[in-house]
Length: 420
Image (tube, rainbow, N blue to C red; front, top):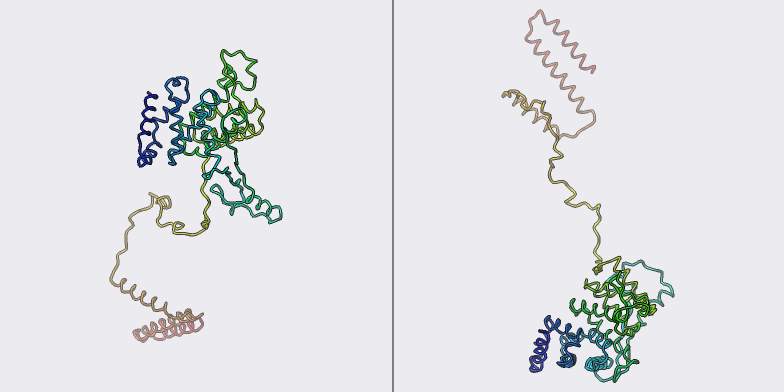
């Protein structure tokens, strides 16, 4: 099934015209059936050697790479790891070797045929990036060492290349070529599907554990001990791997672990054990750092850059600080023993007139200026005048015999008022 699908895929590209290549490239980006078929064929090339299928696939990928379409170029780059593993395990496959040499020679030179160099700056916390804002950091004293460190951060660049071109892969050039190709593959990791990352991680585990025995107590490879000390049933020849190549493989494994790809953690353990066996300090340092990072932070989320907006104080008074209505908890509970319906007093017309007069008098007095002692003295005089008027009325209406007694009482009252 996979063989038939790949053969049709090869014939389809050969029949395309120049105007149809762009549309074809867009369709290949999401062609999962072809991707699965290519991975399955390249993982077991011994089954398809008689059909010259490997040669056709290598020629098709090389045509994709030189077509000039970015989608076809990315499609060809995602198969670099599986082609590298195939070449390292089976060096008799000349078609794969020719494809790797061609891709390498195209990448180490520019469009003019001159050796190219890739330069990039190492990130520093002194300068802002998509992960942090340098303005929020504590301002250090500007001294000579700080200025020198700032200048070195801007001027010191890390470069990759220039690399010489090669004609063939041998023991002297093989490690350098495959390491450079994996470096180019790691730059396109974001465009590789998760399924492709999983298959690559499984290929990494097979590559670094080939030639070593597997113990029955653990499913992982026992790389710490030499295979000659064990008695395995059948062992394939051990693949020679350099330290820089393992570092590039760690990039793939770390990216796969962040995307929760199956087999990434297993590949990480296998690389660390192979680095321990080969005694590569840089591999052990990078592998242990990735392992500890994944243990303490299983998922890494990119934080957005902090904004410079002013923060609102918690003590600021807003409309929400005021209670707009009375909650049921604040309503006091009335006692059931208190009488609810009290008898109301009858209101007569005389009382209403008296209350109206009082209200008018009180409202008129409110507009008068308040002087100390004036109001109290005015009330006393008014009270005395009322008493005198009442006394005079009584004197006029009283009989003659009672005049003397009444007069004496009125004089007493008047004297009493003046004394007050």
